Every structure is written in structure tokens, then in C-alpha cells.
Length: 324
Image 1 (cartoon, rainbow, N blue to C red):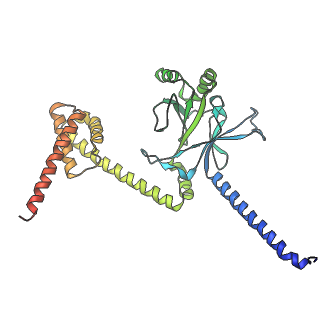
Image 2 (tube, rainbow, N blue to C red; image 1 turned 90 degrees about the vertical axis):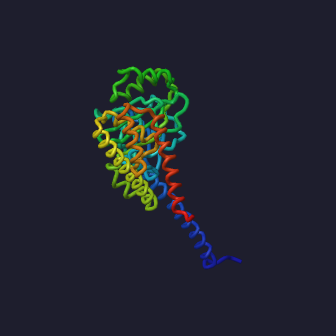
Image 3 (cartoon, helix red, strand yellow; image 1 turned 180 degrees about the vertical axis):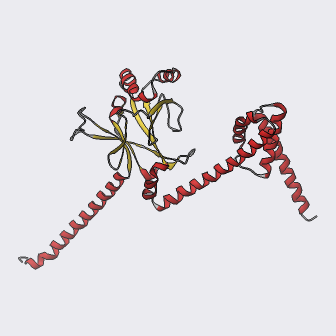
């Protein structure tokens, strides 16, 4: 019952086949991982030995990352492409902030936190942030890297609220382009347990136009375009309202109340022109002309009274139309 070479061939072929399939699968997974890495925006720490040569065996630690194409046009300004970072398991201590870099393409630094250039600035924003998960004593910090206008937002945890509030109130607590030395040499020294959580990176869309075109999958591109279009229309509608308000207020010589009127309109929900909204705006302006700045309460009252009138007029006209 010795097996001849020809008997073995099919078995060898099958084994090779399995191995080839396994290799192909492995290759595919690696390619996907490489693609994701090259599409990632990361905040990472490359430890430097002070000799301008990064340690060859020094670890590269990722603190936060996200795929470039998972960003969004910023809701308030679609000239900004904002990417929310996913937190990694690694914890960044505040004292290590200087070793951190914003990287793309698997580790090419596009901005470094070691020393900010003269045109780069940072601010202690405390609890003023558009990140909903700011909780406890976390303090929001914003760094703007110029000239490329990339903005990094991160939280510091473990810096007592009373302390950062005092810094915000004191006028020359830190120089805006020396915020990193201030955080590392002052705050981290006082609070060695303080840690950093990297939240988001905002790019100027104009500067990354090519990347947006190439990296966004077709479906996502459509959706992004539709969103932009919607916001553009809303912005043009709002411009129309402002022009109407401005010419009316200038005519009556009460243009000094223009900014307040704009706030009032946003608050009562008038963001575009229509026959009815124009009437409301005229009524509000006439009220300002008679007795100066109007309160939000008065504006709401005028609006709801006019809405009721409009409703009863509409009902009335429907009655006339309906056959007796």
C-alpha cells in the first residue's frame, strides 16, 4: 500500500492551494490595514532623545486617531473639515505633550506640539467648547497651527477647575504662542497626574481640497456635497434677511440696533424671507423705531400675535373658497 508520487500530487496541490488562499487573505488584510493607516489622521508620540534623532527602537504611541474620510464639514463653517478623534487605550500625560505630533499617512508629522511657530497660538477655553462630552473638571484647550490653519482641541483632566478658571480670568497668565511651555512647565509640574485627551482636528477645507476629492468614497462625497448645498442655501437665505433688515433700519435711522435685531430674529426662528416673515420683521423694526431696543419677550409676543392673525385669515379664506 505504498503511495506513489502521482497519488501524492493532488494532496500536495490541495495543501498548496490552502496555503495560497491563506496567504491571499493575509495579504488582503495587510493591504486594508495599510490603506487605513495611510488614510488616518493621528496624534502620536514619537520619543526624541534630544539629539534630533528619533530613537530607532523608541516606541511610537498613538493617543487618538480617525480616518480622514470620517470627518464632517463643520456645522458653523463649511470651510472647515472636522475630524473627531477616537481615543486609544494609551494615556497621554500632560508632561509628555511636547513629544506629540499630528500625523497623516502613517506617521508624517504635519504639526508638532514641541515648539509652536511664531504664528501658532493656543488658548485655555475651559468649559467653552462644542464637544458635548466635557465633564467634571476637564478643561478644553485649543491650538491653532499657522499658516496651515489646522486646529487641535484637547481636554486636560486632573487640573482643578478653580485653577484653570483663575488662569482664564488672569490677563497675562500665559502668552498665547507659549501655551505649550506653560502647560508642560507650570501646570504639569504642579499636577503631575494631569492627563490629556485629544478630541478633534479641524483642517481648512481649502488646504485639503485634493485629499477630500480623492479619499472620500463616492456615496460619502454625494452626502457631503448635499449637506454643503443645504447649508449654502441656508446661509444665502439668512444673508437675504440681513440685507432686508439693514435697508429697513437704515431708512428709519436705527441701524445701531441692527446686531440686536439679528439675534432676536435667530431666537424667534426667522432665518429666511417670506411674505409673512417680512411683515413680522417690519413690525419688529417699527416697534424699535417707536421705543428703542425691544426685548425677546416683546419680539415673541409680536410674532405669536401675527401668527394667530395669519392663521385666522387663512381659515377665513378657506371658508370663502368652500362651497356653501
